[in-house]
Image (cartoon, rainbow, N blue to C red; front, side, top):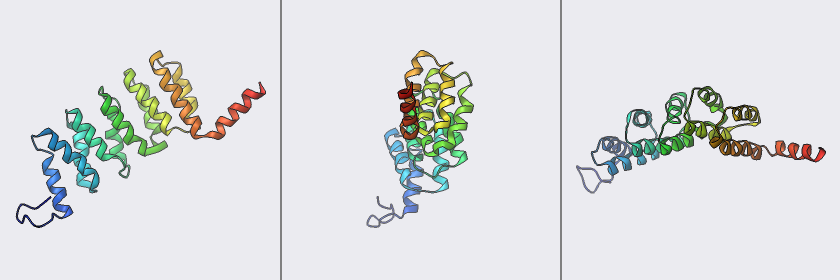
Length: 186
């Protein structure tokens, strides 16, 4: 990328970031999505603020997904978590999936948040994503919660719950060995 004033000079990082931020408003959708995706390479509060604004306010699914993707692998903070957590309820699968992938970065600290939104008359697609995410970040303490959810889950969500339970057990092999030992003793 070159500066407008001198075609032979390479842009500084600050100039590149300014250019990318300005490009977010470009009317060409592909170009603005490209700019959103490139912001993942740069770190500043201004960039995170812009990405979160896109996640909160943008109606275009592709732009939201790109912004969520650019938020991945950044140092998790509470404000970002709250904005991304709302996206787990989106009717758009791509948005829910990308939001869940961002929330994985919060590891087990996200469990109480997932538990608190679980009981709010959710659509099956949101329940499925929450249960899946609990399977990714859950601990052995999460298992009783998931098993309690089994009682209220619709049949179509049960395979996801079974996978979530197995994910946690696999992560905590000691727990799995105890279960095998218990079955052998029966």
